[in-house]
Image 1 (tube, one colour):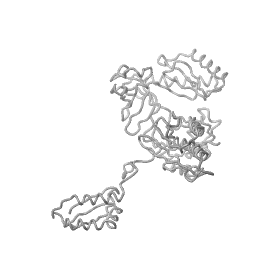
Image 2: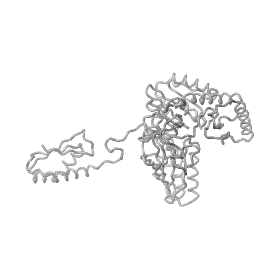
Image 3: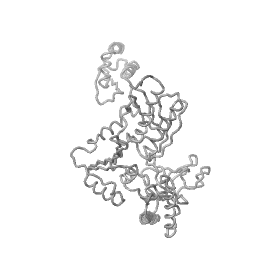
Image 4: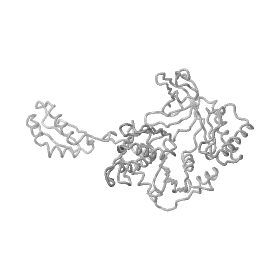
Length: 484
């Protein structure tokens, strides 16, 4: 299995793609318009406490006020009243866990965390932790003893009341590497301390540059190669890899061909396909994906795949492939919130277990927190995926001005009937000699070809002529009736 990172840079946009065996798995786009706030730490001010919602609006200095729920206040008991924990005008340290989306502000927590290459500092943690991905007991004991000995000999700031977690990358780490990482983290904390005297709201810490953080996470997935098509970015990336100890494994390659990097590796086509609702499966089945503000729905169909017979094995084969592809599409499109998958009904309980197991396995390495439910009585699987940033369609698309993002508009037949009803309602009393009907070309053609008799009837009863006018500037689901 080959995993590669491709980075396409222009003066106006940077795009990063994770590709596995030539299949696009993730796409991240930075247009320099609204950098992510996730991970940033602020000295913020409480603006309004809302007891009914057990929440508060908090000013972090951004365009929209952020949101803090009592569940995200460290050491607060959810059964307590939020007014017992916060008051209006209070200053507090917060960290962004979710970017603003649509009209909603950023989501906050007071349980601060800062990550370096080998460590994560958790402000709310009281003892040392080691990543569960480090399995060998002797190594866990070694790391625990190494960390304890270092912490005991260091003078830590009084405000540093939390503790450290050793990441999976710390496996096999030396004492000097760990010392360097701890010192880097302490430098960050002391820098934050020096800014805390300023008047709120003030930014104390900003997460490392978006693509650096992304690359770090992707390298942990076992990436074999990094290719970039910008010489300047290539040099920066080489320096970053060298500084972070990754130059031995990952020496970024510079794409020098004239053709677009994403087009050379068919990434562009796969991005466009991820904006379509239909997804074909290799077995002949298909998925239909619909994304709304409330939830996203994936419908699984057998399509052209019938197998040897319409039986439970056929349904199982389609559903197993659909589970894998649904997980890929959810991560690629960055669908979040509530997601419902409507699998083909299966009568065998073991088949349901296999499909659910496949789905959970595909999400096992997803960096975004995901909760997967069991099959419901109606054969649905519900997924709750944490929303941290905009979906792919929200980044690349905008609502249709005709249908206002509903996905449907009134039919030509319906609009023709509406026009005829409006004409019938008007009492002209001989005041007008001409009525102009302005509409799109299809509506005008429909009136001319199908409803001539009804229009002539109106002319006779109202003693008024009718002029049909094609108006290209009028949306296809609207019309104007103008007496002249």
